[in-house]
Image (cartoon, rainbow, N blue to C red):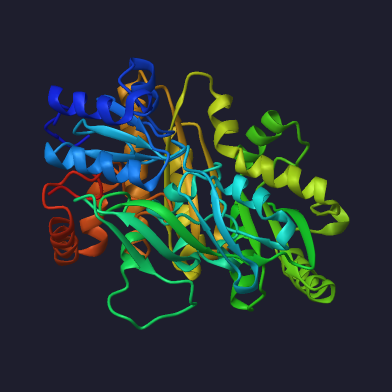
Length: 468
């Protein structure tokens, strides 16, 4: 944790919040505690108050009141982040966006939708299922669209459909002064001025609070096919992925799950997967296209030891079976935590160029095995992104120190290979120390200059990404 000085809510601001929001503002300990923690391993004091926003005007008024007293404001979505993004490290007000969860408009002809930030990815896809379209970005948790935009999230479909960076077209944003601005349009491209939408996407709530988000939608594929391939080693699985991508096969999803994670998922989701490293793959397109993709990948997998005749290559032939498998994959984090009762998971993610994926993974696995710390490995390996989760006893300083050292070695290795310290989790608090290593002091100074220009009193989610 950085050494941040608390900026608590003064009595005058407490009174103003109660007057403006009434029952929508809570200072109850249980509510504050809920809004002061995420799924990560870092602890911090809770916010001083929680405002439940129902509208853009609510967000605007809460920010204006906080700005008058230079008190921090932190947006809260689903609470599923892993790097401490929503922690009130300097105190302040948490603005819960969960009740702003409406679909505002669907423009099926243009393949766009505009939503409020509190809607989750599952709620969105349920709301638009009759249009023949879907929103493909799917981080493991049922995260809010606002949180996904703030962290530039991605997920299992990113290898084909991209990340939030490619799929957010426009934003409505409340600035640090309480002004409402709009960035971008529903047009697919623009050359008009600075690209403020891209600046805001991934800013982790430090430059503005989103109140409307316009997204790109995609047609539901005509045909979908999924397969499970078990391999004799992690290297064989990764080499299969590298060869698949280098051949230009337009695979929609390809997930690596190591033997540890398979064992945990089997126990949690009552599956019977072979407890070996496996790839969970999915193909989208026309029936003929899907068949051709699948045959190509099956041939590559066979060369690396996933023999269909040995039962290592299996098809998930029904939508129900595909859903069951992908649900199990998305629950891998929770399966892992349950595998060691009382543990905390120190989770990390990095992303490297696809050609360096095998080297980075194999060295990192060797270090994790030698440490003696229980761990699991999953990855969206089609774009070089993977996650380690180190399962530690929260009361053991030695285990925490070992896990953090593994994390540090993993990130340093990824940076040496011209990768990134975080592929999709974001920097938050946990990865602040790596940003200068990756971007360089000059680039981080430019980020600070932008932050100071847009938020001169440092009230928007302070203490995240970099220190001012």
